[in-house]
Every structure is written in structure tokens, then in C-alpha cells.
Length: 414
Ligand code: ADP
Ligand code: NA
Ligand code: MG
Image 1: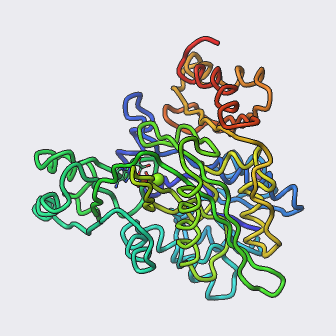
Image 2: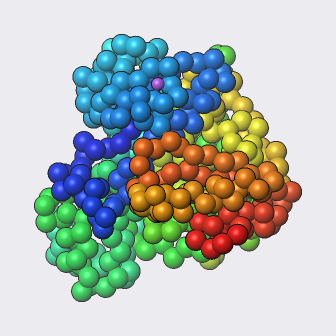
């Protein structure tokens, strides 16, 4: 099995790259790699060998634990072909890859899952939404926008606030700008590179009560008929647009609302034809109980980490089973509830690194806590460095158990 993995440095401007090394410019660029690492762990349990393509090669989070690694960008067609030459099947842990190269390999008969057309579709958030709209998936209203003047017109129509978004390369809120009123249009346009010709679109504000997420697996049975499995609903809370906590089952969400979220997520993934793998589906729950789809990731997802401690088969193994054409595993909760918290880097000084790790030390004393450290080479501010999942008899007890860890994340003594 081969997968394309790493950091989208190829998509960064020189200024962006320089910013990473500056204390105040610490943007959330270098957040990937952990999904591949956890996929490798799952592969080893299944007796599958992995080769990783990552800009950091064997010192990347996934490369540290895989049998083989190639150092290179996953935008580099040559490197992707080299990867393909060493593998039986190609998969990925990030959608910002050279989909064209994957498409060409696929046409030559190299198995790639999820299918390159889905990766390509999802890469363009606007095209993704057009596709989902065609398949009658409920979404916030959205429109393509090519100028500030057009954005003004849309503002009249959608009302304020509205959300301006980058079509390509976005993650962890990096490609979003809130347009709070007409006066803030120039700043939002500037922030997302509208002036520089970056492709943007705009969404009507979704006045959500909660953000929900559902993982959906799509595989095949022995006769190559599609099989699907859906994981439980998660309540996900973002901080500064980065996933902070996930709680399952979600408290204060009715059974009906949960079933609706699972149905919308499943319907959305059904629209991807024969594509296999696991998909993370982000949604908004509104006050009236309706659910709108926000976006889809064609890979394991932060909101599915809890499955490692809480479900029959976790999202990483499920992804491999789906991609390899093995029977899908059980998605049900084995516990009454689970809560996950992300550990984001606080800074690279020894003091800030120690502070970043404080919640992990705290979690060592919490019963039923799963501790995950990703082995990234620098404790950069805002970078996803690890996560902790605590399970319990109920979601409330998981929440109670994880409380000291949450306090440690916020720098409070335990
Ligand atoms: P990313 O790829 O960075 O995760 P998202 O489109 O998921 O981008 O947006 C990040 C966060 O911004 C969401 O999790 C949500 O909190 C908020 N958001 C996104 N779209 C909207 C919207 N239309 N209305 C209100 N909030 C939104
Ligand atoms: Na390795
Ligand atoms: Mg998102």
C-alpha cells in the first residue's frame, strides 16, 4: 500500500514559508502527517506494509513508523510515480495532492482509492458544493465571486455576516474570512488574495447551534458490490477554526437530529460513485433541527480520532479495509461516551514545549485515557502535536474524566 502524505509546502509562497520561522507569523500550515502515522499503525496490525511520500521523508510522523519512505512533495508528479512504482495501491491522508498525477496513474491501471476524480472534486470547495447541490444535499447558499463589486451585490442578497472562502488549498480556517458587513469587504477580499487573483466563493452564514461530524466508510464486498458503514455523530468544537474537542454521543442533540446527520453524510458519500475509503463529513445543526453539510474530507479526519478508543474498528483501519477491498469493520461505540481533545503546539521554546506536553502528563493519571503524540520535529505554535481521548460510561462521565486534561491545555494547574 502506498500513500501520499505530508505538508503542502509546495502550495506556500516564499513569504509564507519564511513566516513559519517567525514568532508572530506562525500560521497553521504544518498540521498534517499524524493521519498517515496512525494509518501506518493500522496497516501494521493488518500485515500491510506502507511506503510514505512526505517532504520530510523518513523523519516525518508517518515516515518514522513506515517500512519505506520517499522524501518529496505530493505535488510532484515524478515523486508520485516513484511512489507508485513501489506500491500495489495508492491512497492519501490529505486532499491537497497532485490529483492529475493520480488520475494518469489510475488510467494506466494503478489502483488509487479514493478515486482521483473525487480527490479533484473535493480539492475545489466550490465544485464540491455544486456537486453536492446536484445530489440534493442540504447546504448553506453559496455563490462564486470574482470581484469586490460582486461581493457587495451578494452581501445585499445573503445579508451579513457571510463567509468568504478560498476554493483551493484551505484547511484549519486558513482559507476563510468572515465578512461582517459591507465595510469589511475590502479587508476580507485582501486577506484571501482576491486581488492577487485567488479563486474565491462566498457562503451564506449558517447560524449553527452546533457543529456535527460523521465518518462514513465506503468499501466493497466479495462480489465487488458497494458496502457502506456509518460511525456515530460527533459534536465538534473549533477554536480559532481548528478542531479543539469532539464529544460522542453529542449531548443535547435528539436521536432524530443524529439520524438526519448520519443520513445526510451517507447520501453525500453515495454521490461519489465507486470511490472507496473513509470520508469525514462536517455539518451544521441549526436551531430548527435541520442539518446543513459544510464540507467533506476524502480521508481519515480529526473528528474520527475518538474511534481508536471508542469503536469496534477505528477510522484508520476502516480506511485501509475499504481501500484494500476487505470486509468493513464494526462502527458502533464500545463505550457509553468519548471525548477527544487536540493538543496544539504552544511554541518552540523549551518552556512552551513543556507546557504543550503538560496535558499528556496529566492524562497519564486519567483512567481510560488514550494518549497520542505525533512525533513532529518542532513544537510550532498552532501545529497539531497530539491528541487525547477519554472514554466513559456516558458522554457526561467522559467529559468529567477529561476535565483536568482540558484545564492543563489552558495552562491551569492540575
Ligand atoms: P476548513 O477547511 O478550514 O475546515 P471550513 O469550511 O470547514 O474550512 O470552515 C472552518 C470553520 O468555519 C467551520 O468549522 C465553521 O466553524 C466556520 N464556518 C464555515 N463555513 C461557515 C458558514 N457558512 N457559516 C458559519 N460558519 C462557518
Ligand atoms: Na520509515
Ligand atoms: Mg472544515
